[in-house]
Length: 129
Image (cartoon, rainbow, N blue to C red; front, side):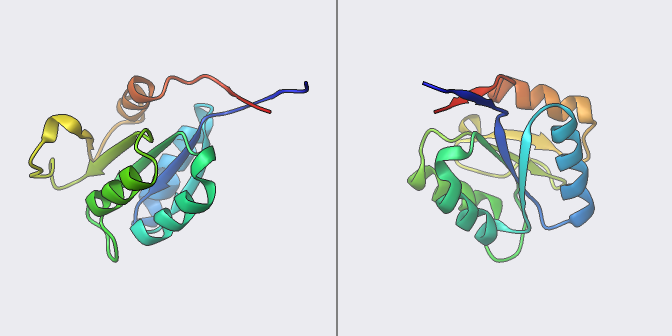
């Protein structure tokens, strides 16, 4: 059997183009494969088409159309084991169970982002058959 290795695939969701590009560059340089979406609706469509190939979603909370918390709920229904990290410049969300959410406050240093990423998704290649 011929197996090949692939980098972990992360979906970055943010309506701010500069931040979306910055995060994508940081994660790509760190060895992740990155997909991007401008809002929760686009992210949901990507996840529905590529759900088997996503390893983690990193999403802003405040976005038009479908916010990050709504996206997280939709992704949990689609693929419960898919980890989601939430980010916001407005502080942690007032969710009923904050202990269940992974959160990083904006602005963040690339090292802070990578540390959180490594806690949730250790950088190791996955096998594609």
